[in-house]
Length: 389
Image (cartoon, one colour):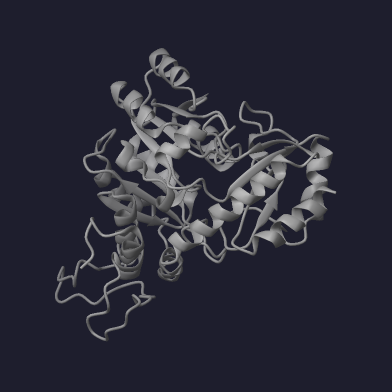
């Protein structure tokens, strides 16, 4: 029997994934179905009527996600941004104010600044690694929600989740943490006081660059603008319909089963890459919370099981050098996204964070971001050495 006291690896393999009672299949089936036979009008079998509202394969994933994050309820979406949009609409209403990281993911910034701003949501960027700055922003203008990333994308800043939760709750605000970079294996924001967690399951949870998806997990008792957050998300997920399809949910579940062992290797490889880059003469700065010189190192060590597989660095010779390095790697694939078993390299200013250009969230032009995969570490190091010249 799997319980909340079971180990992470056990829950990742078994939570929501009991053997099929009819056939004994040890892997949940893909219920590739849109509708369900009713036993008389309103006579639903286990509550299933239409797969936008509920689907057995998606429900298995949602139960697993809730178990891994220690949440009350999990919700699976068609993408990470669909999960974010649903959560923001569930937690806020027109006229509300939101605090966001001053180095937030470009897609999150675009959603809030260019979509939800038209719905009446205002926002203010703040350095979340500085509790005094957060306290000041909350006192200057009441906020409905404090949106956090830790580590952030792509500058890998670290915020103290427990401290942010205290500040948010003292001000009557919710704390939401984007836990994509860490994954639930390395970090548990709900246990540290967050009200909800979001993920792009496309990344480490799926882990194989073969599926797009998102997730949202609520803490017990979390309250939105119009009542219990879980109830509001349940309604909006069905009303807006951006749900994960059955095959996408199945692929994500398959990835989750190996999350723990993959994250251990991602972290191990990333640490070696960060050490090599820190000693390379072409590199000006390495941004990796596992390095003792990182300003968030102590906080990350306190609230994370490991420092993750993402490494960013800045080139001494500026933007042209950064773009050139991205074009010279042979094992690191030039591409967007992250968290797959294969290593990726990108130029955030021209790729994933281009939407933040000209805004307070614009990223440095000399920045390169790596998603360090699980290949042989020496091969990754050699590829970066030759790309750096």
